[in-house]
Image 1 (tube, rainbow, N blue to C red):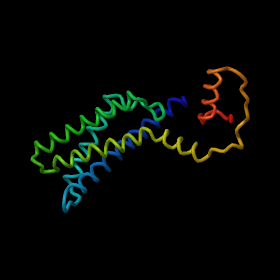
Image 2 (image 1 turned 60 degrees about the vertical axis):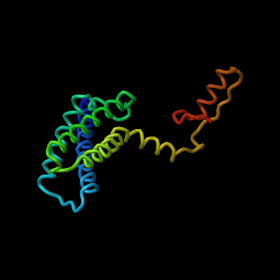
Image 3 (image 1 turned 180 degrees about the vertical axis):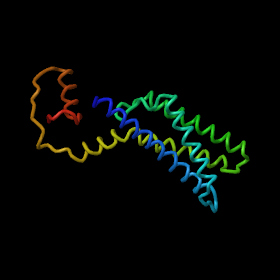
Image 4 (image 1 turned 120 degrees about the vertical axis):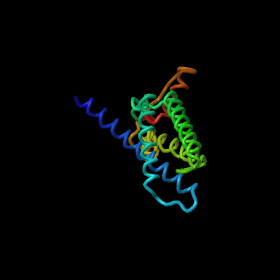
Length: 170
């Protein structure tokens, strides 16, 4: 039961993180590319539409089945393709409305911000763990080991022990 509850909380976290990524990306893109921009109800409506389309696209492509540390190259390709598709949808929307809400430049900048922010949210656990391990490395907790013989296999084990942060040997 606890495992199912954790999965639901992680899924909710990813949806909230994606929602924040969409809102922040759209606002940054809009205020960077539009001179004299002011927040309006139209901008809020377009951002809400982008939010719904993005969450639906990510769900269809399967990005909500990926939970944090299991992100791999296939998931990165899925994320890239979905952001490209969303960028094309925004470019088509900008062209169809003749730039009434935002221009093509805003759609491109939005896509770039969306890619970076969703990528960071997907890899956040790995990034935090990487910095944590780097900052908390100390030789006090490591055990000494001696490898005698072994030839090339022994050298490979030594290299792995020296470079791995998951093994407490030095």
